[in-house]
Length: 97
Image (cartoon, rainbow, N blue to C red; front, side):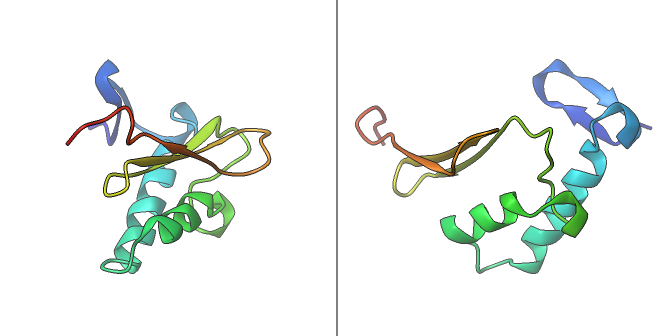
């Protein structure tokens, strides 16, 4: 039985070798979020997303981009591979509640 589905494509993966470590990365993110349950804010989520695979996280050199959305402030934090850090994007002017 497949254990990982790649979004809307519906493509399923049964092991890390065919999913760019996606099964382990997903399990690691769930574990990190469970450990911080009730204490996750934008800063903590950035730390979780940045945790390397080797340290029980999901970040690896092949990660093209990382993203954290903060609905309360209507901001998006984005980090692209090879970039110098996180970029904060203000979306309030483009979104209405």
